View 1 (tube, rainbow, N blue to C red):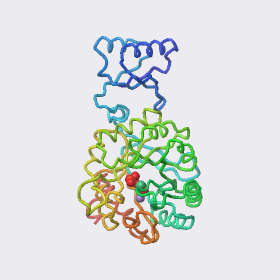
View 2 (cartoon, helix red, strand yellow):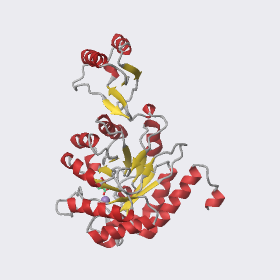
View 3 (cartoon, helix red, strand yellow):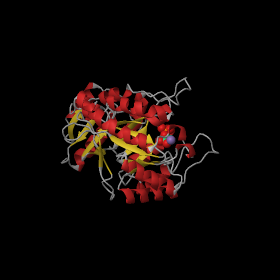
View 4 (tube, protein in one colour):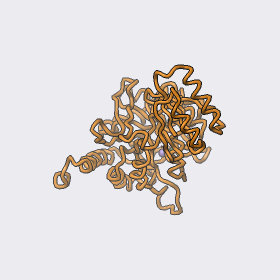
Length: 360
Ligand code: PEP
Ligand code: MN
């Protein structure tokens, strides 16, 4: 249940509403209104309310509207914003702004995010940033804090990596996305980054989700699907961020774990149209981590856009064989250029703006 509070509600009316909710719910959590798009809302599991309490709730002076949402996630449910969410990236910095999601006419132009798995050094990142921009991608990726499976592997440059990313944005105008792994580092990473990435291994790191939701910079968050997460678990993780006050969440499908080691993961493309039914959040696909093989990335990129993804995130390296991290799945700038072109053509075809004969 989502309760919208009237903006003109008096403090007495608000206090009355909170007192009523305190009495009629068996909520363990204190009920705290959240501001979303200028509206104040209270979200709760309405199954706890009997018919009499629900009726009483509707009569409260502070209540503007009560929406019943049956799924365990509420604020990210499609019915909360049927037109879909568009996330504005880079509006605070001097880089270009990019919109992820549908425009005012409901048409989506796919956004391509590309860059190395890890920021390895200044030269590697600046070179890659220029190649990424020349290939037509709109956002630069690069890990400064790396969640590595082994403690002996390259762990990223940390703060120095963030500074190099900010320099690359300065030089190219591309907004940047980078991963944050700890709640205590959210504010620091947000000072440098245009999008905060929460990685698969942290999808259910609840203190991290809350910190990203409360980030004072209000940076959009890209939430990657957990290694073996169900769609409901993933949407509930997104709900944590939104309920904490940050509505700008982008979901990223990056493959889920299965039994066959031929590919690194299994790219669950059926989740893309399914998520579009379940949630208003934009969905982007990461074919690099999903497949673990650079030769599969172009085909799965086309397939992702065909499935309706609002964008792609791709690992690119000037010399994949020498990459310190994820070289096997990293593409070259030439491959990136043709993926960008194909993604645009595919989107035009889907949006009905091109005919097959012209595209072919
Ligand atoms: C990454 O994007 O480099 C990364 C570590 O991804 P994931 O969290 O999907 O494994
Ligand atoms: Mn990687």
